[in-house]
Image (cartoon, rainbow, N blue to C red; front, top):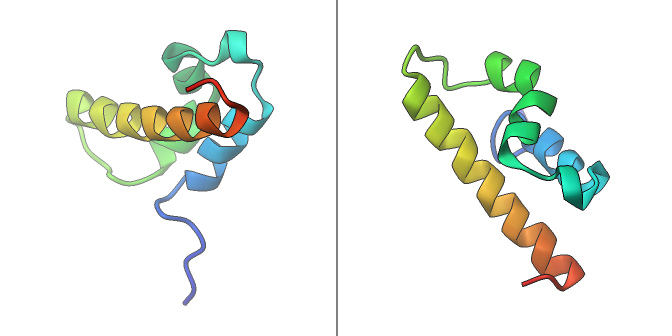
Length: 73
C-alpha cells in the first residue's frame, strides 16, 4: 500500500493554505474549515488538548511553508 500523505488530512491542510485568503488564514478559521477531516482522522482520542496541539503544530508548520513560498517570512 502506498501512502501519499504524511498524515491523514495532510492534503487538506495543503489545500487550505493554497485556497484560503491570507486574511482568513487564522487557526480558528483553519479548525472550522477542516473540522470534519480533523474529527475523522487519527489520532482518535478524547484528549482535546492533545488533539488541539497536534493540529496546531500541523497548522503552524504548513503556515510557515506557505509564507516562505510567497515571501512573507
